[in-house]
Length: 392
Image (cartoon, rainbow, N blue to C red):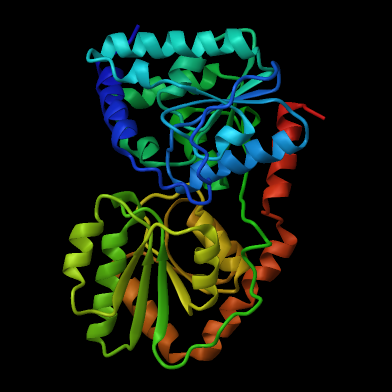
């Protein structure tokens, strides 16, 4: 039975997937849908939940595909180069129905139809809503929901949907999480046992993200933001922190990489400041910009893990991060940055790092050392997924 709370959230979901731009970088220009060439393997469900989550899905699909494991995807719109790797089954028709309840029923039917056609060994859904609800009603196939720690997870806290989420997650076979923080959150809020969750931490491309060719600062502190320009990523906090640091006579050059709903307003507010917006760029440009930066500021309000932080660690860039989610894990365990509670503390940290080059260098060198001990590259993540899926 579809509750009113669930239906309201589903309406928000339908609006989001219809309007969210394709922010997933390096997904190529494939504009065709591949035809199903085999059955079995893995069915991955995704609909552009975000740059980080989408990239995780993309690289896992690619890695499993290169291992000879049949891949199928169910998603919204064109998934870029996913079309070259797997059979993409659109669900535009389902979510575009005018009536939300009818749309839900159509999406459930579409999912069952795809399962009947590709007959996978397992389903991996890269979003808890609405897929935990739908997969919990499916039988006869292994069902895994990847909770990336997006805004939904926190928005439903202390609402009727939180109890529904707990019940649905308990009914699927496994819940994958990107951080220990996320595992603890689901244990505390949803009653999930550790044995019911699997840590899937990372990842990054070591061929792109490395410290080779890193340039030294020549005066102004070079600060970078990487992420969607959406409230949960805190780009407004980035802008405010940089402005506060400038008011303290800190010389800064700030670069914002990413796009989203907040871009126009933020750009207008930064007119006449050394804060430059570059829009959505490829991973290669992100890596190059990181290597020419002195610090990355990660002001997220929620963060399951923070792939941009892992990439910065790999490029030997010190981190100033909000003490939230998986960010506090990465920064505290690596020792490669500073954790802060407020925008004012972000600004103070930027001023401190601009004045202390020795501190910047000491923090920077800890990033690659940490990743050498705790592998978070894509190949390592794919191996974890193969083990979880029991596929050789």
